Image 1 (cartoon, one colour):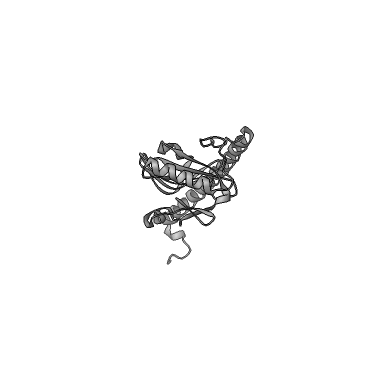
Image 2 (cartoon, rainbow, N blue to C red):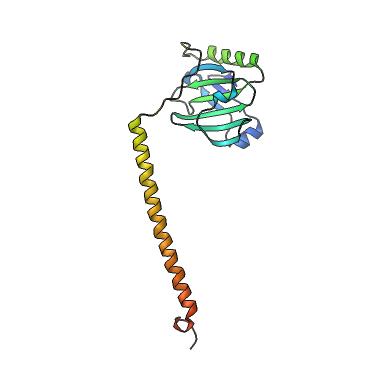
Amino acid sequence: MLTQDDQVVMRLAWWEKAATRHRDVRVPLEAVRRVTVEPEWWRALRGVHERGLCIPGALSLGIRCHQAGKDFAAVRRDRQVVCVELRPSAPFRLLAVSARDGNEAEETAEHIARAAPKTDTSVSWRQPVPVPDESEYAAALEYDHRRSHAWHRMRSTLDRLRVRAWSGLRQAAQRPHLAKNSPR
């Protein structure tokens, strides 16, 4: 991860680009909210893996989704992680990239924090992902329930039609003399 002009750039190797189906990640420096170093690699991961390559317990490369938005992670086991929290105007909420060693992680974090114009330094740790309000959660569950119910209704209707069609074909096969195109 480096700064180039007025952007934070996360450069990906060719195989990482192929695995994530994404180019180098570029974010404006104005969108940087906070830069921290996470000593435990797995703590940088939030949400569920959406696209890219994920080997549980070893590697997470690509886009991860959670209730606050999307994160882009290039994280390997047993390495410190540079976490760049971003403002809502950015395409991602967090960029997380593993460093080769602890010194490189600290240097990268300090460099990005100095280059970003409006970095929040009030706390030295990442902020938790906001939890959705109970009413929003209940509404989402109700929507999922209605959608699921409609799906099951449609599925049972299709199953009934399929049974009728098969039974009609069976009856026609059992009585070929009743078929329209049969020779007499």
